[in-house]
Image (cartoon, rainbow, N blue to C red; front, side):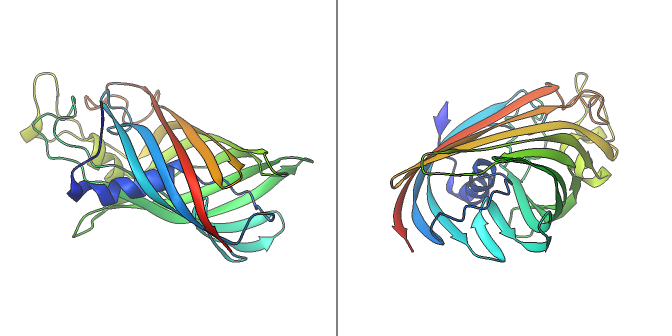
Length: 271
């Protein structure tokens, strides 16, 4: 099923699309314009949350905005860049998730999950530099906040990872980024998604109190290629919850979860 969400859910989903399709690659594209404006058509397949058997497909038009300054970029997500040295960078990066209705198969009758935004600093160290690519150690720590009229802090996420990065080197090149590593989250974060209170318990959904700790393995692969006035890109994400502190929650139906998206962009203005 492909659909557009109801108007009250579009802002959170738009942010999720913008941040997911343009994950946290660190390539510096010195040959590209400083400012670009255009329009994108993005399609995504999103699980209702990590571990859910339910998923939704979305097809949405989105604005396309890029700014590549020395200290601030709107490019691979929204990043404020502080270069401590050539190989050590402090950034501000983000992630997001879409809202989840009570029609999620595991959460029937439970309160819906609000869309959320994760934002925080990441310390990134270049471990190895090759002629056409680099290997980075990325250490993002993010605070998760619900996307609603009265936002609530729902916890913290730490996702240390190794990232292989190949930037654009010439016109027509593919830009590639692969990152993988363990995830850790606070008890508040896990509680929001995976705890089952007595009032919501059923024979097939026993009471469960989520704890903080290891949240599973995550791997991301992003790719993009630029043609004259047209940009094509996408991502594939894999989550594995085996051995995590949330694995035994009845709200986890799938220990292996895939997420993917594609976007086609028409660049209308450059400077």
